[in-house]
Image: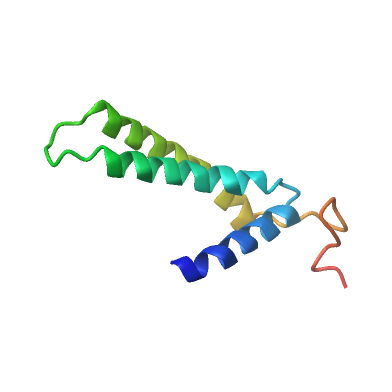
Length: 94
């Protein structure tokens, strides 16, 4: 996982730039996942009772999932901006 993290971030940022979307969204996405995982790890009790901290972890995880899908769907299905944009030339232009 550690070896694939940087190429994953770089590829995502490059694709978002192709769509003229700021790369700060990637930091927000990974930050939301980090908060959700941290909340979950520090609020496990071993029982079936849902504590307020565990509920916060679930809500943050759902937010992170929705935010990830918000970024993933355009990256997978939307064509990039035609011609040069604020982040450089069109990579498909010949």
